Image 1: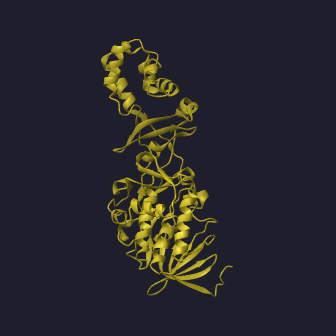
Image 2: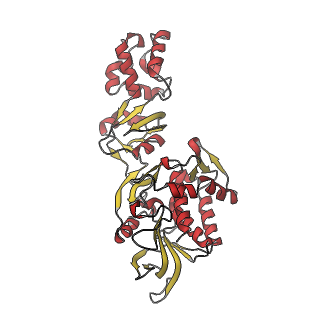
Image 3: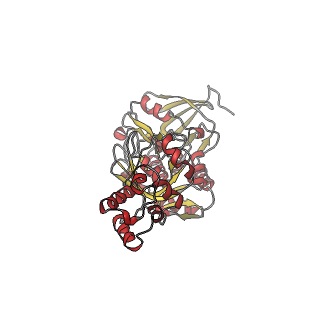
Length: 407
């Protein structure tokens, strides 16, 4: 039953957002004996957790360290990450006997389903005496004179000593993502770092797609480089452009107009390899040789596109007919093939939001605002964005836990 406007429920802590950081903050504060209320406007708790990791929730990464995060202040995340580590969350998973497995590069996934993590968080909240309400839209927040806050919501009015903003970013608007947390931050004097879709697929030009779109679904392990950053993982060709882990990773460092360099043959000294091929199989055609490391369809498509088409006679030229200069040009093209994204798939496909609430007026120890006593910001709403692979969840756990120690 919705509360009457005349009835005000008072809490020690109110948290806006029942996602990863909000629920972690809630249980931590609750276990300290604080009376905690979590409000979420969505009709279901933990919706983004449920869809994460292909439905299996990549809940942390064994190799988490500050270097895995982007921020205007790269030092800000260090304190929280040091005080609540990947090992700490792994212990919580073990407490509930949730089966998990490690994939490549230290990524930990549930064996079964993401619901296991939501159930864990909700059970911890129940044990800590936390009240969690869905379908509760916050309509207005007023700072009381002296200290505390009043909240007007679709389920009545509430007051609290501490207010935690755990609203997340703008990614997956169909899951209910809004910019409300950013509005609150600005209301209380905080600056915002420009928000951009991150960990997001690239779209490519019609000309590019006319040549490569038939390869939709084909993938290859590559090294992608842009703006002094490189990632070695899979690239996946789609009907609109390119995706896959390597693309999602490099997208966080890409700006409109930038070129992305593709090394199609990672881990190989391409020049030496081509020279060996000339000696051992001089009559072999270039496309045949390349298809030993890439799929045949991809090798042929590359040889029929751009500079490689001219250099290799659409892949038909035997390697023995290359001059030493041409052979070096071929090696360079395979190592530094130019990809020019037209744009990205935007927030509808972005895993996270780059940018957010500037951290210069937020305590890295407590996550409390230095402009408004009792106001805290945790998780993705802050200008802290992790790499792909469980790092953003670890930031959610760490920042939520640390704020919960003080809120």
